[in-house]
Amino acid sequence: MSRAAKATLIASLAVTTLIIWGVHWQQQQEHDNMYRGVLRDDERRKQKMKEREEEYLKSQRKREIYERVQRVETTVPIPDAQPSS
Image (spheres, helix red, strand yellow):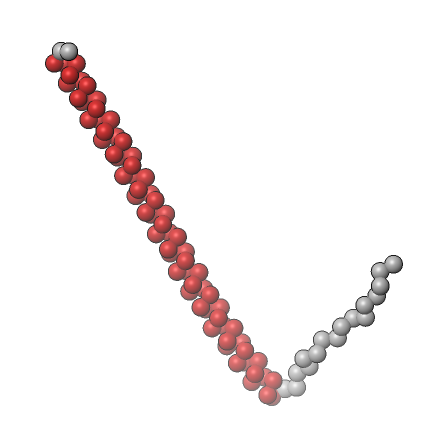
């Protein structure tokens, strides 16, 4: 094998190796970035659930106050069950 052929072979192997390494590195970076997005979404969801829980408790406290002041009907009339014909 001539020197030029050896140099070409070594250069092509080096370039191929760098390209493969670069693609794997890029894929890992994208994977890590997507995972950080999942973590951010989970944190946002937890915060939203906490806000909803606080709003629910606030609503419950208001309801208790209003029920002390006003008379509230808690029974719901059930319609007569009509048999299907």
